[in-house]
Length: 164
Image 1 (cartoon, rainbow, N blue to C red):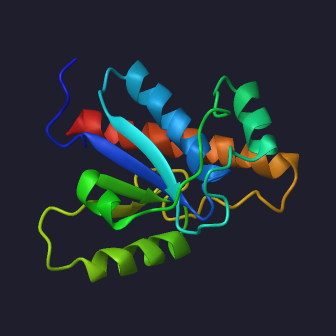
Image 2 (image 1 turned 90 degrees about the horizontal axis):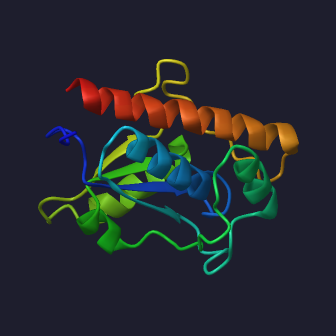
């Protein structure tokens, strides 16, 4: 299958610390894109620097694994200004992350061809406009909800690209 012209060639998924939501979304997106026959570079990062160099949260790893996603080898990193030059699309897990990303992008406003920014749930008819809640201080149900929302929104993005 050929990639549609509206399909980005690269996506960065961003949450706060890059240890729960965004690494989970990275692997979900990677698998769903491959199943759909799309060749997309997928990565993740956090707006904060607390967890740089760490593996994803053990609870996130456990819940992801129970759904067939292996995230244990991913390593947290912080968003950099180069990400706005090197990715076509940056998807934020929540409104605060989106605002933080927009502030970084605004500081680069004199540059051409910067990544487009959007909320991760933007294309999802089920969760449109909703934040993917941060499960870090939550329980098992919160991690399950995150996977459900991520799977739904990733599929919605892929469907939107297949339709254009």
